[in-house]
Picture (tube, rainbow, N blue to C red):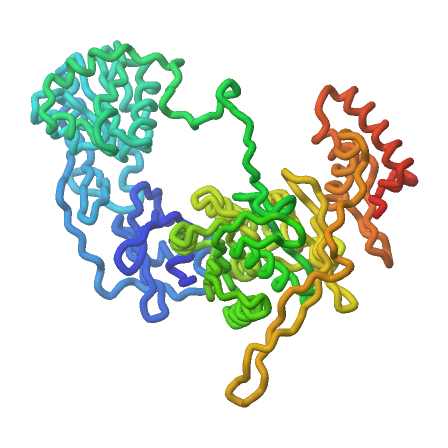
Length: 594
């Protein structure tokens, strides 16, 4: 990622030409007044509020954003045009400050101090914030509050007393400005968008104990998104004040019934009879899975084989499969996956279309919103129901796997893919130095994972074992080996080969014996979860143990009922699990008996 893109991401900037516009960290910036871009290996910055480029550089250093980049002032400052000036007068009719509107669209204040304009950083320090067109407002017993000075001028031109605050819908009213509404009837007209509605309701709440009356008047609610008071007038409507007065007085305790999430209500819920596990008993549609293991045990071959069975709609290891297109992100390069696909087709003598689509480059799912949007769009276009990200280390784009912030950002973008494209996301990942501790990286990954599959190897046969399920029963051990498939010869006349996954004798799918009771099964699952989250490895063994207290805490999360009933159920279940040799226990620690 370039220096400018890195800083823009950190400051929440937006693309602007060949660079970005961000909020300047060198002053209290409300309107994104800093231009940044990369040019000839240098970071070019220009603050339109007047901050010296050295001050910007120092602010970047202070916030840890510079990363050694060289900062230079642009040789040719960007030219912008002022298209409108909005003057703010106090109650005596004296000019106090001005808001200028630029093209491209941006607003910048400057204060009139001692007969001259004060601009740039801190120009509004100590300046009383005022309602726009205050002098007209003070001559009226009522006023219409809208979003932005442009709408105010449009309403005033129509003979309507109107005002606004500087800074847009998200800005807060200054306490000094609120006093001028005392004793007046106030009509608040929101723009027809989320920010407009939220800002208008905030205005009503701020004025309800000050003004004589306050009415929230959503005149544009049935108009196009983004419509405002000017659009309402331009549509041929008349008597705006009369229309506002028809709304009831604002009740600060009234609930905004339009600003809520959609819910599923119990009386309307019907059972879900369709099978969400598109790989029967193993993978759930729209969920997230992690396939992990050390290097050279065949986890990528195994994941690709499973994904190609999904794309073909073939039964896999005795599990029914719902056919769906697959998108495979070969983040470590396309050479290997190309030959694996070719080997799969040759081995199975497959001539029909296989909707298995490969992205042959790494996709930055840590800090590149454009890449995430592009990936989501690709999933939609290809109608993929499964996305494989191979490997996590490459799609996290150099981020720190052990840092909660970086891992959280990756998980959030995986959730975006799932939510916006409706696809299952599978991450292929590595173990750390201590393989017994599971997949490497921050614990938030496991917490967010619905299905976790560990791949281990030895003596020519590898084993893929399901170690966590959020919705399904935890079972599934799939032994496999790799069979070489010749694909042809290279330009040197030497054979080119790849491998396909073959089910091994040790990996025939078998259900583990299960405790007979639901409570026992729940408590045994709690033990498995506690071992993964807080277990300790026994020296010279793959066995892991965990304290009884940790096991009990995990079980209490999963058991229903009151605490005293949970305690009784837990104790009885533990006794049965130990007696039936599902669990081992000694000296306050427990483990699973395989």
